[in-house]
Image (cartoon, rainbow over all chains, first blue to last red; front, side, top):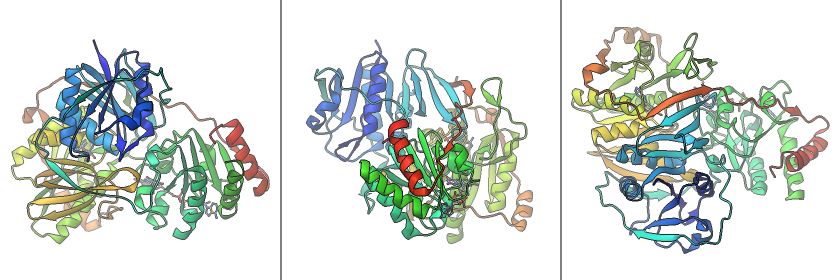
Length: 314
Length: 259
Ligand SMILES: Cc1cc2nc3c(=O)[nH]c(=O)nc-3n(C[C@H](O)[C@H](O)[C@H](O)COP(=O)(O)OP(=O)(O)OC[C@H]3O[C@@H](n4cnc5c(N)ncnc54)[C@H](O)[C@@H]3O)c2cc1C
Ligand SMILES: Nc1ncnc2c1ncn2[C@@H]1O[C@H](COP(=O)(O)O)[C@@H](O)[C@H]1O
């Protein structure tokens, strides 16, 4: 008997959308799915777990993420319930936690997968910044996989069956590090790595204040705002907004690049976007070769118009 | 304090990669560089050294003989020492980490060990965790802020939505840094003098066999390497901008169905 576990990542109390993708993928395996969640109360997530056979709820006094405790606890649960495959999201937390679980279980691990074959124990993931795709075989008793957000279809609403909830506690291990505070960003930003729509600005934005026009479109679309490295280096945007080789790898369904030339280091960070739109005044800009739709225009004219048009339909 | 910076040699970001034997990259004509996150954290380590005269910065790498050129670049930036653990390429991350850990143990006295948050060849984001596990010391990933006090460090780690976790831990520890750590965004250029000086620094060479890393079969193996599907080349929406934007929104809604 071999089951699939899904680690549910919460942001505060919020159930992240990518969890639904992990649950959807787990269900496609045909195996019994166990959702694993650290929470005192899971009644708010009732709908999310419909049709999932089992939920393992770990009740814990401390509600902040504790890497070593979480890893030890999940490793224990995997052994106890024969969760030979464990899925999670390749988020900042996922990429911190999952390798620790692998270390704890002596399991095999691949981060950021875009395809999973549960029968053959193989996964696909982009390597060399997405220039190539590698197929990896995971051997050993435990296979630990984080998935790239926005790749897998979300779990469809299943039957109305409520899961069996198994309550348990944490495994007490010495925490080698102490999280002493969580500092929220001043402005509530849409997280780029999970955003469905991103509008980004490059050197063509000319000034920090001008990012406001992107922000306005983002509000209409509920999108994240990204930037090229040139924009970050010129202080038009903050480093956490950088998309690309040394910034974030993003994977939205729509990416709108404004005043970005389309250098390879930028492109590799957003190339898997389902649809790419480029707005650039230079018809020769390389970005147009990579975009699904291109607009040759001054962005300071085009972006406000875009906002108006979007407001009409949304 | 002895600061170590783990650097990995990777293909240049602009390199065109061809596949060999279905699962390797063809190394001919590839230019090799220090993985960019490692280069940034090296810059950061060198800045720490400039503020603390009793700090020593040592580079450490696991790689084939060609990795020496990358070590030289790191020395030219200003690192004082380097260890090259010579191995064939294509080692799994756990083995690389074990080799790094063993070499560090042999060195004896290590303080903060810096790594990048990921190497840009296979984007694994694993080595630092295995390294910390082998050394039984704490590790924090995605570090964007770093401060040192007596026997401990306080770091900030970037999480979702621009938020940060503030974390305290003891030294020794592993710090896997992202770009922008304490606002360091650019590595320095090596000066001519730096390059000349670097040529004379002896690199400590250790063969991986001598470290006694047992040849455990890796749990992850590459089966296939392939090029991603080509995107159909784009379409320029012609016309005056008021019209073309209207058309764009229509296409996004009705054709691409992403709105
Ligand atoms: C190791 C390494 C790592 C890197 N990592 C990254 C990374 O992570 N992310 C990244 O983005 N880059 C990265 N780069 C940098 C990259 O090579 C490019 O320099 C950068 O992406 C260029 O940014 P840009 O397109 O905004 O600027 P530019 O190339 O200067 O392009 C600006 C564009 O704006 C257009 N424009 C100007 N004014 C207007 C206007 N009014 N209306 C419309 N269009 C206008 C211009 O036609 C031009 O095409 C990296 C480079 C290296 C070497
Ligand atoms: N072969 C290696 N030699 C030295 N350091 C390495 C090596 N591989 C990985 N690292 C370090 O570990 C970090 C994470 O790498 P990875 O797990 O491959 O994504 C890198 O940024 C390096 O700092």
